[in-house]
Each structure stands twice: as C-alpha cells, then as structure tokens.
Length: 300
Image (cartoon, rainbow, N blue to C red; front, side, top):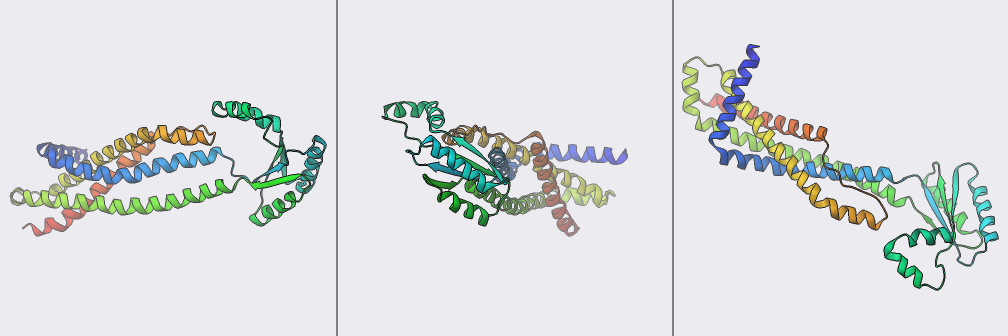
C-alpha cells in the first residue's frame, strides 16, 4: 500500500510538472505522436488488406473461356472433359453467356453500353476450383485445358491473390522494422527530454539529497514523466491514425468498387488502441529510466 501511495504521489508530481510547461509538453507529445502514428496507420492498413484478402478465395482457380460461337453440345462435352481431367481434385462451375450478360447488366455503368451492342458479347466460361495444387500442376492443367476443342482462352485467377498475400507479408516485415526504428527514436526523444529536466532541477535534486531523499525517490517522478509523455504521444498517434482512416475510407471504398468488392476501411480496434498506448508509455518509461540512470550519478 505504501508503494502504491508513493507511485501515485510521483505520478501527480510529474503531471503537475507537465502542466507547468504546456508548450514543451505538447511539442514533445507531438513528436512522439507523429512518429508512432506512422506504424499505427501502417498496422491499420495492413489489417484491412489482410481482411480483404481473407474475403477473396486464394484457392487455385482457373477460368476457361469458350469461343463465342461454341454450341451448347460442345459446351456440355467440354464440361465432361474438364471433369475427367480433374478427377476428384476440384469442382467445375459453368457460367453461361446469358448469366454473364445479366450480371454485367446489373451494373448501371455498363447496362447502356450492353444494350447498344447487336448481340451478346460474352462467351460461355468454366470456373475450375482446385482443392490444392502446386505451380507445376496448375501450369500443366492450364496447358491441357487450353488444348480442348472450342476453348479460346485459359487464365489462372488466383495469382493476384497470392501476390497480395506476398505483399502483405512484405509489408508486415517492413512495418516491424519501421516500428523498431521509430521506437528507438521515441526512446531517444524521451531520453533527451528527461536530461533537460534533470539539468533544470539540479539544485532541487541536490537539496533533496541533503534532506535524506533516496535516489529511488528522486528517480520516480522522472519515470512517470516519461511514461505520461509517451502515453500522451500514443493518444495523439491513435487520433492521427483515426483521421487517416476517415480520409482514406472513401477513396479505398471507391477503389474496391471498381473490382466489384464490398470493402469498408475499419479503424484501429479498442485492443489495438490499448496496445498502442501501453507501448508508447513503456517506451517513454524506458527512455526516462536510461536518462535518469546516466545523468543522476553526475549530479553531486
């Protein structure tokens, strides 16, 4: 209980010190907030991209487009041959040219264009979904499907999803490196701030020692000062990430709409906010602890 009372007193003392110099406090918090906002915003964007990738099937898919003039009997015969090539490794879905036309007519931007065409421009197509296959097997199957009669084009549809997963993995690694570098920068900012605090309170520290104050008692407010500065900077970082979410939500939604995807950019979750605040406070405490440990011994 005595330890908790001492910590509360030190925290209140640090808060009063921050309030006595609001401009310097705000300036330091802005530095911390802007630096922490970069990885926080990147984490938010990566989380949304990962959610988008999860909504799109990354399972291997192959689209087989028939020639527009292919008859119904030819389409049925081709479907049997595709099923024979697959055996039990996947399933086949036929998208008729009429179904494709109806799907595109539902798009307001294309309905007038399609009405102006003399005939249906689409061809019958098959979507082949495989349970699991490596790149060599997929390429061999694509080659076999391209050799079927009346087949005009064969396309692997899952390549872009795999590229997206690879980009997300790369972005996660880059974000980790950026967060590490900026974290060291936040420690350095707090280190320098506490050093200045120690120099300005040198006389007060010397008098406190003469009155019998221990180094632990002297260090405690500075630790709290660094933690509170980091906490305030973390809150500003979260607000900046929220502003970025609001600003990017509309253009991201429009971009997803161009690919017929329903996507809403989500801000940082409550747990992410809590982790951000805790990390910034911890980095501030580490910077303050290192600064106090280094410079307090130099004050006689």
